Image 1 (spheres, rainbow, N blue to C red):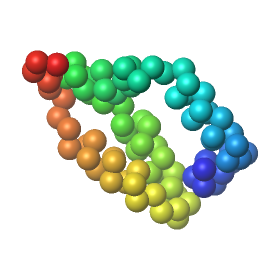
Image 2: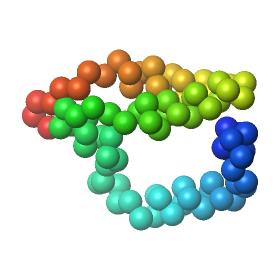
Image 3: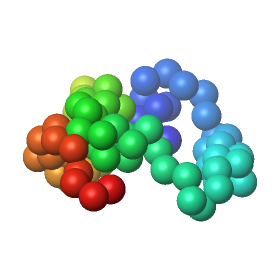
Image 4: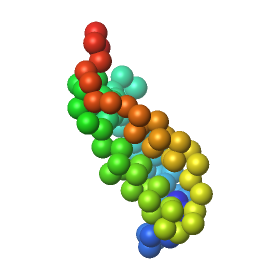
Length: 86
């Protein structure tokens, strides 16, 4: 939320809560994300365009985002290759 606001978005905590509630209500627990299916197929992941963009924006505004930064580091370590047996 802090990064979105620093980038000019006028969001409230209620907006974020609504999006998350809608997402969890519509997505069956057996479904996965597009990044999961890309990973299983051995395709490149889109983490630079999602988490990377957030971390870059946070850096521009001096906002600490340690969890996103850690996630980005871990995702960058994944090499595109199919996962056998999945």
